[in-house]
Image (cartoon, rainbow, N blue to C red; front, side):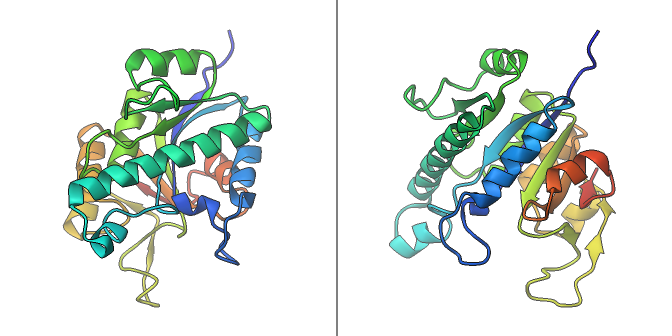
Length: 236
């Protein structure tokens, strides 16, 4: 009997499509992610939740445009659908089977998210790209990542972001900020650590979901996360 693959929900920032060096549109970081997932295919299977901030951030651009918060969040959900299509196409171009499942009804993008479509994709060992957020405004992609991780029964949720872990304060504003390797959800909520929103923390804590935080832009970040439980920070 073949060993069971470890299921991981990978939360990616929309900035995966932006070059950290030039600030311009780039697929190099995502291609690195693809190569690492190919490398881990024998032992891991992934679901992906992608942010849409490279196209539209509801809380920022929505405010600047003067549109209602609900509409701004809906536009942000559409941005995640565009990113999901980009990811799926690049995955399949590199012979990595993938499927888009959408929380927003749009058959041209992908089937609706359900336990049945998730189970079918996992049985076929396809990387699932979850699009459309939760389908409802006012929920972040962090909360969506916890939700989808629970639905696919992921052993861990990996948040690949632009910083290398959880800090006791914003490292961009405080040069003395200290990296925290392991922290409880209770402490994260109490200290208002901003690496994830409070709703995501509460949902993960309720269901005892392990979340790991690390920089997706570090060389071989996914491979390091798979091999080294001390890589990045862990919230339990």
